[in-house]
Length: 185
Image (cartoon, rainbow, N blue to C red; front, side, top):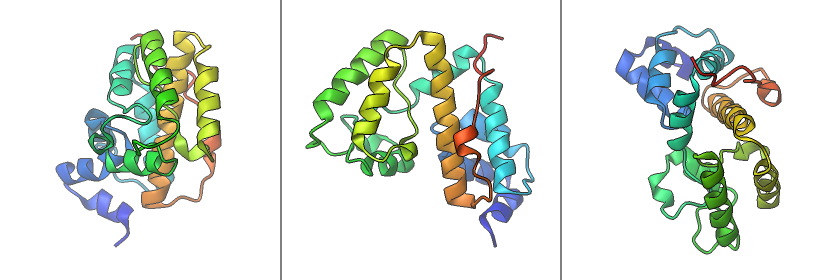
């Protein structure tokens, strides 16, 4: 049985459990998405996640962001398995990483300036230098821009996770736009 059929046939609790890894520590979004079943394709599933992200108020977005781990956290085991894998690919889960001090400094500056952790879709980065370049560039943005960028990145992460788990014939990951998201309701 395909995973999508399994998701569509699951009871609500099982469906939420299947969806939870797709949206980092966002059980309410998983619950909303589960209610939109059945899905005809992985792309339909991602669209439901994307729609839920677009509907978030600014305060809900900030809450979602704060549930995300920083890059190279002190306790990588506190991250979800998916985040451990994504950060591990770039050696960000190792305490011996030569970038740990720099990332800790950037994490602190970012959190102080914006009030939430830096979020980037690591799947878009080939190496740590690319991550650092984006991190430093985004520290120059205003808060509203960073709120939009963070939700864009979450959408890309979710799209990547949906494709990995459920497959997809769509390559919209680079075109995801949440320009109207996280507005005060």
